[in-house]
Image (cartoon, rainbow, N blue to C red):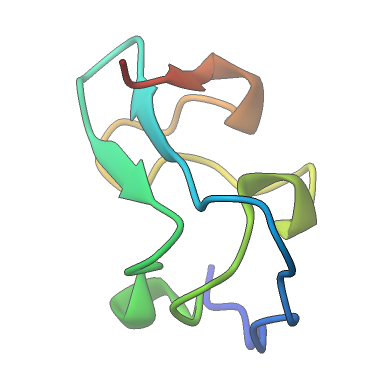
Length: 67
């Protein structure tokens, strides 16, 4: 699935990194996933709920904060 999301202005909140708890893929909001059509600066919450991990197919809910 390829999306075309444009980043939204973010004021005062740091961008986060999330990890797929199934395969370990890191989603970095600062970098996005351009190959998947997700622009840099796109918050995980702004990605459609039916989006899945491009590596393993896990749901968006499988992504947890990477601390």
